[in-house]
Figure 1 (tube, rainbow, N blue to C red):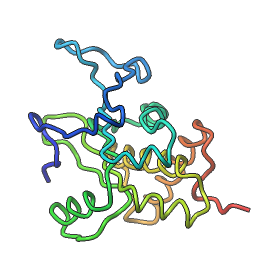
Figure 2 (tube, rainbow, N blue to C red; figure 1 turned 30 degrees about the vertical axis):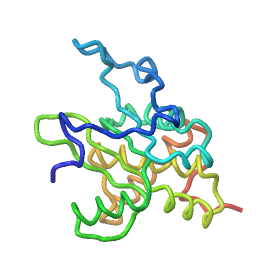
Figure 3 (cartoon, rainbow, N blue to C red; figure 1 turned 90 degrees about the horizontal axis):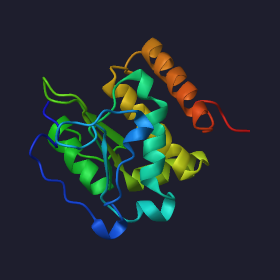
Length: 184
């Protein structure tokens, strides 16, 4: 399945929300490509409301990606989108015409990266329902998407448990409580 963004695709960015910030290549220890750009994921904030719920969402995403860098599966792009955008992508690429918290798209053959796309309203609703800070839930979903890109899955109970344990270990590096452990 071809990801929604590929080479040559132009991303619309909400520059009024500060998406023109430089990407901290040193955070993930990436090399610089011959064109001078860091070989790191691009983080796009497609809706300024993310900033109302998560302080400096780009930094939080960078921290989450850095914490799971040793697992592989770093995306080419992380998009903080809306339910509407995710519903459209989910319908077009997966035949499910409803929003979901996070979508991941593997890169085309021969390319590295992939895409992680998150739906604002669904993330807010889930965080509220679970009684967790939105920032913690966002970090969890970025880690979750990165693990999918690294080949982890949760379709079978054993695979799900392995993925959950890996997520919990990575999130502990970020001081994010284990989302799989009931809160007291």
